[in-house]
Image (cartoon, rainbow, N blue to C red; front, side, top):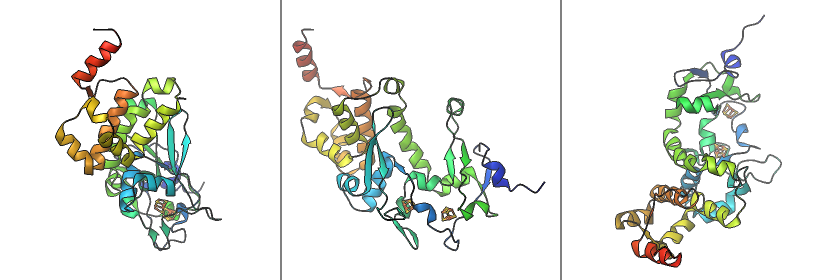
Length: 266
Ligand code: SF4
Ligand code: SF4
């Protein structure tokens, strides 16, 4: 029996934070940038914030140029990075020298060659587990370089993506939404705007009657004018309020009184 390379074993092994795997990627490898072609990359809301700002585009222009939207299993929209329509189906951001958006590349590109292993047991444990992907052409996987999972996560700038994703998951993993598939087009549209088209959500908050109805502090309003992450945090709260019925936003007292009167409560 021949020797088994560590990654061959690891491919079928769940890695905990202190575990290690073999990997090294650099431009000298014959496979350099091959992994940036013909792939499906789901974009998270935070991916879009980083990418559209790196490209100096509005979220609407970014989505129109670089994304495809589909309806996922829960009935909520999901956004995928649009590959070029050439034979190679290359990512629009790949160049001979690598990724032209490297500092702001999406979460999926950062975490590669790992993939999350998410089960009820791992989620209950509150620890993220991963496995090494099995990609035949990737020479990085047969490198001698040993990486620890926790170092890798830090080097790739992943912690902020996890923090932002935890907010998003409050919506996407909500039992009520999972059980009752969303089919209402208005709700799908509202979710899409709040999660992915943040610049439109900003106009909705600042330029509609929104602020006449909800109590939002002047400081928070000021911050949301320029800070996309603050706006995203607020968008998640708005979805928790509107989609999940959680009382995380306060309706103005006079609006509440008018609503109660209309409903014959007072
Ligand atoms: S080593 Fe793997 S990750 Fe790096 S360029 Fe090659 S295929 Fe892509
Ligand atoms: S965003 Fe960058 S790293 Fe990700 S697939 Fe495109 S070129 Fe490759």
